[in-house]
Image (tube, rainbow, N blue to C red; front, side, top):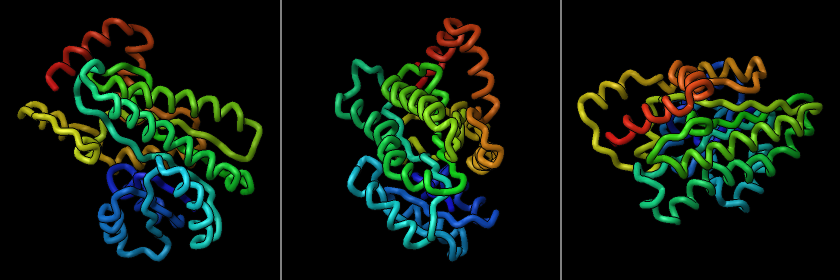
Length: 258
């Protein structure tokens, strides 16, 4: 039985649909009920799919969620922390402090809330998994997304530490770091950007959420710890490891267009 945050759209939606097709029971959690209902419709109202409205920064709501899901499905075996938002494309010096804090509340502390609420349940299962969906921004800086990157870097270290803490237990941990994926995270985060025709062409060349979901499911099945999703993530990981200054300058040039 799988719990997926941010399951109303994008990667989360396609993870849910593919897992249902694979025979899993799935609970999707999202702040947007309409998105979840669209996912339900796409599943042909699958009897093993349940919807749970959730703001992962609402600690009290998160704490009561495991019992709610167990009542409906009987057990929980996998937690996929997928929900996340990005910031407006502006330098940190121009970014409102409330937005900076929101980046950490959603992209870091929201995941902490979920882990602390669900881990005791997962520890009771014969085998279980926690899957944290990170970002390229967790290991390489993107100017104009500094607060977002900082939150994803914090999530990366949280996942690595959690993996060590749970190494000798029944709970396996995975860190998924996707590259560019053609989701609506910009729109869903309330961020507006002006796109040129060239930008639109590049967007069309991004990895589809369906393909990203397939790679993530493969990682879950193999219980892999660290997975880079997409050719761009793998390329940037290599370049930043060996040529950090050069690739940072190249990314800075590109980000100025936004």
